[in-house]
Image 1: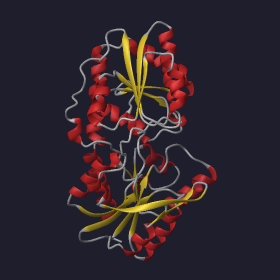
Image 2: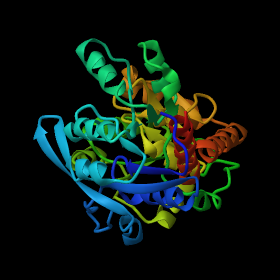
Image 3: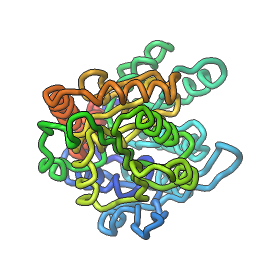
Length: 377
């Protein structure tokens, strides 16, 4: 079915309407190529210091709220989704590309009954898959007319397992609008004195993020006479353990959650490298956007497509995830003597990658362009 006339699209914002999705939503609704009707889950959690992580009221007013209910194990139902698909005037529907969402299956059936096109938005795949899971996911993905993915690896994998790679379109991801990053010029030199190194981790403190490995690596390199400091920004269930591990070192600071952008800028300006030992995601986009190169574990099964922004020897350094703390130690030691020229090159390249792909405006523009291409076909 070829669509004519203006495009009206019902889009379920992924993964939720949280503070970091607000700039993307604002960029999406400010363009004129597609008339968007937005729905999504609202993140109503709070940081331990009382800072809200939901989007502001002016953004939430643009989004119809969905409420997620667990059904059984990984299965869930998004209340409000099917009814919106049933009554929407949109000519196409963008749904979460998650096979475990029972409401997604019903919403697809309703959309097809109403002769609406369907596009998925999600990871598609973050890692290779085989067997029954692969067969189920392939069957599910064949129900859609297209797929918006967070990176370039998923389309390639889709093609390798017999799906049409051309219908999987990378739109990448975002956390800040470009105006918030313009004040951060690429760094010309490291923040630390020669022979020292300052690291930062910013993100959730959970087992899959492996912040304990960052702490252990810093303790190990300092035990061998180096001067390496680590600032940890974030909160989560691993906070007590991180506190215990870092307790005896005056070179490791745990600050808790920080949402204020000016404070985050200040913290990143004091860092030479950001570190991501596991479950890499938007934390590396944040760091690169502030001009801070990244050390990340390559091959961690919990990492998202955002790790594609960490290009070894260009925007940062990658070490094998299988090497764990030892691999991180070796990488940190190698960077202690990094020249300012090499550091400046890393910083400039990281900023360029974010400006090209990962700002809220570029993210929204990529979504719009992908939808126009998929829906006009």
